[in-house]
Length: 114
Length: 112
Image (tube, rainbow over all chains, first blue to last red):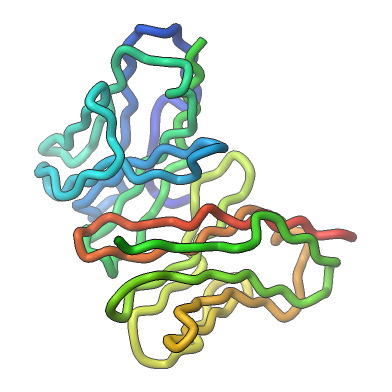
């Protein structure tokens, strides 16, 4: 058990809809990362937060947004969903959010857009 | 930009045989290097990491990896594979702008 909790585990929704994925980091970790994993794109970095502030941005679409709250949990919001957004979304956390700080992954949220 | 390449998409080995998974990176300085494993339906779990010092690092589950600067490689090895090692393995590099880049992954199948 990594200590990172993601909810929900599965999400099925229709195109055009909006969903929110939630992540609680491991106790003591200040940084949260979001990744998208799909068969054709592999594991893609979306965004990173550290102690409530955005620290790094990757291949995150404008339709997607995220935030980290004062209690350090994070939410990833996906809107105007398209079929291609179907993927496994992982949250990971680390202590310092620096390149030498290993990531601890949750079990992911599987999003299916129909 | 920094990149990570895992040349082998899928590898099959017999149980008890040795294993080597390849990873090459592109980066100017000595990077922070990691190997993660993902079992079906699970998140990624850290196997080992290299930052500096001894170029041969030991990890969990009997895995080790060797950093070779001249070859820009960080290959993962295990002397004797167990059926439970069947999974997807990811090499990753820590970037200075704080995100972590992952390779495409190598899927390991273990034959009985």
